Image 1 (cartoon, helix red, strand yellow):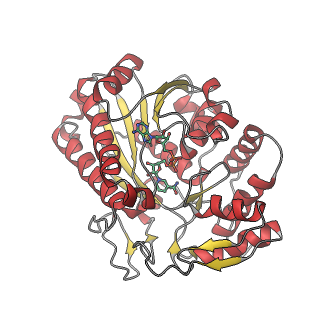
Image 2 (cartoon, helix red, strand yellow; image 1 turned 60 degrees about the vertical axis):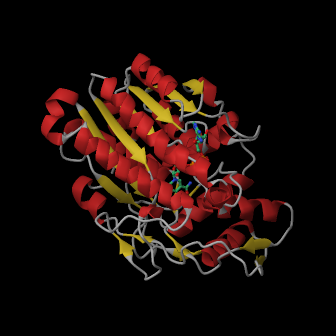
Image 3 (cartoon, rainbow, N blue to C red; image 1 turned 90 degrees about the horizontal axis):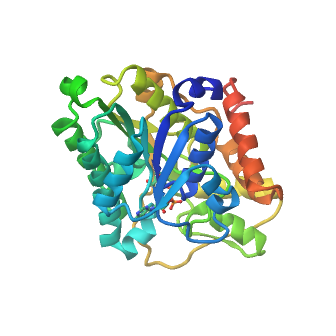
Length: 365
Ligand SMILES: NC(=O)c1ccc[n+]([C@@H]2O[C@H](COP(=O)([O-])OP(=O)(O)OC[C@H]3O[C@@H](n4cnc5c(N)ncnc54)[C@H](O)[C@@H]3O)[C@@H](O)[C@H]2O)c1
């Protein structure tokens, strides 16, 4: 398993460019990268709320922060070229399904043009660079047939968010084929992967219309927890899990840049998926209070009923696998919100614990 001392060998003193560093996953990412001694530059919009995790952890003290729109290709290119990164992790996106229904054009622009802008900037960058583009488990054509999606399954996307990320996958593949082809690696020296992670949970997510922030807010204010799709099945994971996979994959790409430049699913083990209602019940048990109400509004926007990922490829090719099962991930997440210590202390504690944990925790334990 990947440890902090292992990651230090690859990241200490290295320049890492992180887009979306002010967001939920980005804020965790810069804390891990800071722990392993990387020099960080972030590129994102400003956090939306004064209580966002980025402010709670004093993100500006961990990285050089550029607050700017990813759709501005010139500015983005300048920032990348001036920094001369060894690694790029591209997380910036409009990441919410319901927001995609409200603002489809914005969603398509940020998620597709933003990805193309990153990759295009690299055409003018002569140094070696490992690039990980974060898409999502929602990139597959999902007909609710209980498919266990592998990387070879057809891309699709019913709603604008999913479609924009599937489009981002095609853009990544096109840039890799056209400009950063493995055959020409010695000339361009770019190794580019895309990662399709499942539903991520963890402390410090305050995004609207996401299940964990909704549950926490409802319990804190003694309101019923309103569930839109109680029977929807999702591959839930603690936020540190996919981040450890991104980092581990990046180290493998340093060692073998021509072997791991492809797409990878990242998620919990197949036996470890839960419905929204099951997740909510575990959260309620963890806090010791809360009650559920199912949304009665019949005019629901379409969201897939089941979403399950096959993670055999990342397990077999690089040897990464999840440590926490869904129940543990939910407990660690919920406890984070109800623990009154500072966010930075709680995050660092969980990061240390995760990376020190060499024993796989199984559901049976
Ligand atoms: N959270 C999840 O469950 C989940 C699951 C699968 C994939 N993802 C993907 O992971 C990534 C991070 O998600 P998150 O949950 O941290 O989201 P988030 O909303 O917390 O963070 C999004 C980040 O993107 C930045 N951003 C948004 N629009 C931008 C723009 N126009 N220009 C520059 N920056 C912009 C924001 O400033 C922020 O830093 C996204 O690509 C998302 O699609 C998230």
